[in-house]
Length: 546
Image: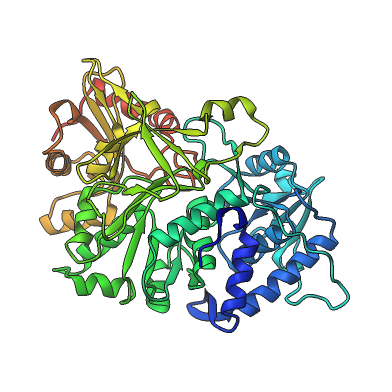
């Protein structure tokens, strides 16, 4: 069911699937551990009801509607309702601080804020967080509970069907290297990407997808939500990130989209709980029916990738940016190559600039940044999106991402190092939860390492080391020797100048709330360096030793 590019819009994809599969199970929701389903027809009725309510509240073509909500049924219904009347959906990350909420709502000029679970009180009262952000004035605010479940017979507002060139959404980037910018994606941008990807990665049987990534990020929105709508398959919303593995058993998904952190936790959890992990145990942990695993958002550690591939579930990695709707390249079972992010989608061109920067062109490239002509001109030149990422083609014709232009470290020796590559190698270790590699202008690389607390505690007990506190454990000579050995093992194939000369173990993980991670768990290096400046200076001044 491939539509011609000029006819692709989100409402048309949805309407086509509802017409083709009205009474088939469509959307599953897990609440209190129980899974309930609704059909495409039932979902369409709710979308129509919400669209009527929005229209009767004065929301019209081109108006911006912000939404602050975790993943839930209401998020999806709101998105489709907003699209169906030609308005512009502006999803906000639930991790935002009150001031950030207010700034983004004001920046896009949203006429309405739809708040979901946790953002409103029992009767839709404004939560303290929203009240303190002053986000509700002059913007109207509605909660999910304010919308009817069925269209009112007396209300039959004209529903505008958006054109392919109409603005569909504004998504604020995570801001790893600067303030967030509002990425403008049109109906054609999004549907061209979703259709191309769904067709390129299509499996033979009807899929069941488990949604664990936040819909406020374009990765889950295109790769799970809109691919599900286009294919007319089944989508189950996980109850929370913490219950993802339990929800795998409830939903028995055939397809999972996730970030590297999820797969690392699965691997670490299995390795620490059972003596020998075979393919059957891995499959059972993911619900017993998984056929395909996809990964994006960040680099996947080679050791984690190998763990899954050796157990007959290779992780198919892809690459993209919000500005590209987002997928630029994707791996398939046919072109799978460890360490790569696959090949360009059929409707996307990719080239490498003289300095190795990945540049992309195609129908999914953004319209621009909201009210920022200057930055748009820098990002897109002659139709080519300048990604800021450095890549190279491998022998199989797949793309490999080797780092970001702005993040390249230049050592005092003049050697250039891509820190993400070293971090990717280190986080494959079951001992290392997170790490940040530093060293710009220094004589050697350094690493801030967040240990896997459970694994470290178990090892301390197994070896009967006398460690009386968590803080003492992070400075204990035998613990430091253990991590020195593990770092050297992970980097055995790295160049000499890529070796980590000094490291320190830190007693907390990097945090979204503190601005050290983006909502998709990418590191904000400047924030991390500011937070741990004392530890960094101490590493180089007084290197820790076993």
